[in-house]
Amino acid sequence: MSICKPYDDVAWAISTQIWEDWPELLRTDGEIYNDIGVFLSEEFSDLEWASFGFLNTGGFNTRFKMNFTNNCGAIIRFPLPGAVMFPEEKIRNEVSIMQFLLEKSPIPVPSIFRWGETKESPSDLGPFIIMNYIHHKRSMGDLLEMPGRQGGQPPVLDPDLKLARLEALYGQLANIVLSLSTLSFSRIGSLGKNDHSMWEVLHRPLSYSMNEIVQLGTLPRSKLPINTYDNASSYFEALADLHISHLRSQRNEADIEADVEANVLADDIRRKFVARFLFRKLVRDKDQRKEWIFHNDGPFPIWCDDFRPENVLVDEAETVTAVVDWEFTYTAPVEFAHSPPWWLLLKKPEDWSKGLDDWCTEYEKALQTFLEAMRKCEDEATQERRLVEGQRLSSRMRHSWQSGDFWIMYAARNNFAFDAIYWKKIDQRFFGPTAYEGDNICDVWRQRLHLLEPGEKELMEEYVNLKLKERYTFRLAWDPDEYTVGWIKRMKEIKKKEEEGKEEGGGS
Image (cartoon, rainbow, N blue to C red; front, side, top):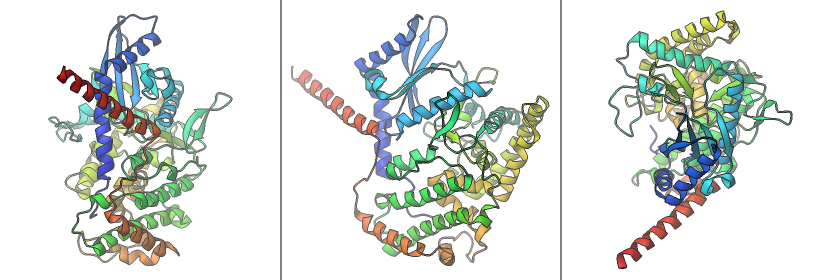
């Protein structure tokens, strides 16, 4: 059990405050609000608009909607400063994948009317996308989750759903997952159109976790990978290196209780570094790698880090009308697609209140239903010649779960979940049993020191000493993007003017 919190509290607080204040500013500042409305109406100058207003704010975007007299609607969407660390890159990648899916896939995706950079946006709000509004009743997540969830609580699968209904809902999700897996490229990265207007992997794979560890893990943006990859092993090694860089940069000092002894803290840090060095070892070792990388040279399918039931919209008949929020989508190792979805229970394993073992027990029940739904989708697609036998996922997903490959993929993609996963689900499979009692795995790392590569012990001690020295340094080394920095400054200026106006009004 770690004695440090996974997120940096100060970075979390700043991000959360921006996340709350910025949409409120856009809704209440008359000049900005009107500028958005005029901008959107001019885009559809041939239509008569009936209403305009704020729609909602999600995890990464805030949205405004305009309704037209012909019963159609349009949305303009801006990335949230403080939540999105690479806004221009995020928008570019998302537009590309949506346009690609509209051209090449049966997956229903909103049409894009226009998108642009900050300099083109109303009131310089930031990069934007204007898309058609998809009429819907609710999301697939609403249909799957347990009723009665309070605001701020994460959803969880309703245990009382009838099996036939659950399989039917899973079946629609399985169809989307299956469709994505059939779209592939020869490199790992984000899509764009080349000089010949052909789709190609042109940019690095900007992932959910890359954004998160800059936002909440205080990793400098310059430390992130910048390459595309022509094989899976090189990408997995880049992810393993990123885990190490993240731990080195993570500012834990403000998250540690004052009475934690230095030697206890030092061992906690060592345990984390040992886990990350060993994870990189099983990526680098060709023999160990053969146990879980089966398609090193691709082809590499489309993968969306943020795909989940909440982003799948359905109508009154509970039929999918659109899949939205395609940020952090890129081509990825085949093994990602061969791993069953984490979201079958709606809640992540590291967030499960009853612990990882209980999550696994409940997940396995849901997985059997999902795999049966997937198998039926595969049968239908094969009969209709939309799928060949070699593209089936159900058997591969079953193997991924049973072999433990699922956990390698999950740990590779989720930096903040790594410590909850590695020692319990990965270590003993590759490096053999260890002598510890019950769940007391805190000292297992000592039994693995002999496995470290030359120089890693010295490097680990160097990092430990640095982090111990930094323990009482409370300066936040946050590296937000220019977009976020600019909006922090603008919001301060706006707030200052508002306060000055109130003072003048009170004195008159």
